[in-house]
View (cartoon, rainbow, N blue to C red):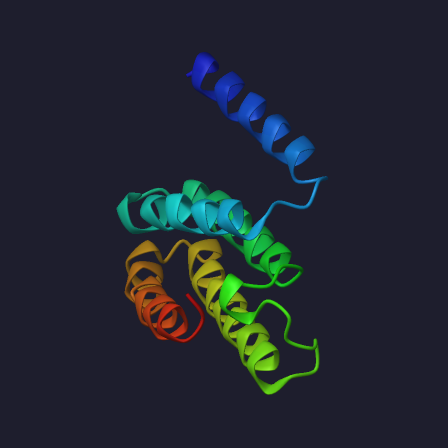
Length: 128
């Protein structure tokens, strides 16, 4: 148990120091994907909350980047605004799932987490 706690704390420190630097879009998407897998598989509400926190940070950071498909577009273009709206919908869904996880409703959180796939697929079609 003690080793598990030490490993978790070490990983938290590593990720918190890394998050001080803005990641590129590919890294953010990798973080989202890796932590989504954790959210879908875990039965531990605390582990789910930690993964969701990392997902939220990555989604917020992704708003600072522009997908290759939108390179050169002005920041106020309809496409860039749509990209940001997609990330905002992801962040809102992360918050919904996190609220359920905080209430220790892991099954409900997993049902709501299934919506992440729809958000991802819709936005990948548009911007990938």
